[in-house]
Length: 474
Image (cartoon, rainbow, N blue to C red; front, side):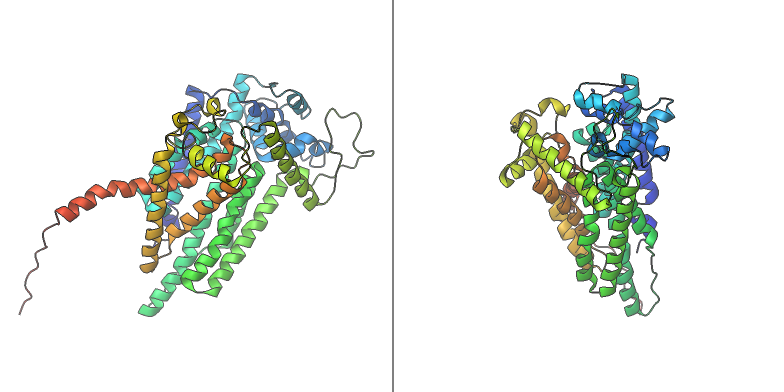
């Protein structure tokens, strides 16, 4: 049985793939920089929050402004850090009010925007390395490499990797958490299955070790992802959903207990990281009256000191923004499950899949278009075929006494796709991003299986001659 370093892909290979992808995204920024997108200026204008955070001013009243609650903190911190490293001074937080008054406002010039995009491109490459590990877990090194390439050249993911926004960091960091979760699940199951097999043979089992540090790492990356976008908190779902699957496979209650404790530890860590990087949740400025007069920013009229109340306020704010966007852009609104399913199947695997035509933002007004979405007729069946292959492969793995990693990958893909299908509010490109990593893995498995058909047919048509065996000696 493979140990921990080999099982994760190996770890060195995953890091190398991620590093190459980061370099590739950076080169793309230099050679072919994407057009400016209005929301990028919002993150740059709010990068001054990094200065407050770095200076330890966590109770500054500026955290309790509209800008403090509107955009998640991680990308603002990354942009502010990048500006400081390049010798630039991030803008003071009141600059964000100018952008809210006019979304065409740009505090930054093109050179500053290029610097702000660098940390996003670096983190996006980390996600490619995580997809390599997931693809290898699903179908071997070739499937991992294909999955990494499919996601790296996916027009939607590569677009997100070139924008100073929160979409790519949330997806990439969440993928790292998922890759660690599935690898930890494999090691735990392998420990139990090998222990049983070695006990039957009468030898001492070789027990791989998954300590609390692994679950803390899972929670750390999940917390960072949630600090980039709230919906990235769903990356913790596989840790819990895989518990009953592990119990069914091994029939060991102790395994389920260990997996549960690990998932709870990861969740607690993720919550702690999210709170630690977001002083909006904890800031308690001692100012009277409230809101303070003379500040050139909009302060929240409702302020509660409890952390749950602050988090509830964030959730309510995001929900209200989504509802207002659906009313403002009714042509893009997806108001029924049927509309969501059609949009996900056609757009998600068409124009936003690997066969989609960039640049994407030029085609956002066409809801369903054969010209833009023809790739869905090829890509979606290929991904579904990959899912069938994983289903059968997981059955074979279980029959051979090894952890059904293929089923674990299917669980992750099913969770991510179900969340997109159930909660996508508008037919906007950013909402389809979570489809692409799972599709890349399934598509890679389907391609590797498709590529093996000619060899299989040749072997059946021209079977190798029987090997010569010497007659037994008398």
